[in-house]
Length: 245
Image (cartoon, rainbow, N blue to C red; front, top):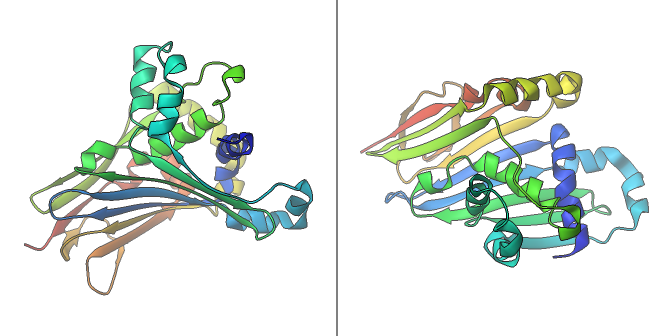
């Protein structure tokens, strides 16, 4: 993995404040499917104008396999506390595609995985943050890598034609610290969004997300919220979807 790739991932947390996320799930009838968290920073790149083209950075379009990455770093990982090893293990099913082209004003990150059951990839956004966190510390000379602590977690279920997404705060003190850190960036964050885009195997009968929109065939739900609102209240994206029999 090139050093420039580490730099791009390390910068992700910094630039994420001004951009948009899409959490997309393709769900099959047997509960299997695909999940991705997509981060689009192209608008920020465009706002930066010609300054970025002066950096002489080469365009990047590459994919990181975290299974291979964790195997490569297994000796370092073995020295971490068991709890941190388990957090890193959760990244194993994921791959991350990174695209960055200053000339074309493109910046995109896509963390994706296939699953046999949607609860296998619970809390995908935390996985996205952890992937960004360890990516910036992947150079052994920078010290031991470990995933960042996250104050919330998200769980997905799909049983008997019902899909749920629920979030909860698991560390109140850390959550309050996160809120404090947002105070100086509220104006900057106000235009950012987080969008759910869920594709189901059957038509949607009902949902608790009253402001959601639907595809013409009735099988796709799209639900967008302000990113700042989500950071302040993780349960703003809690929902239940019931499918037709």
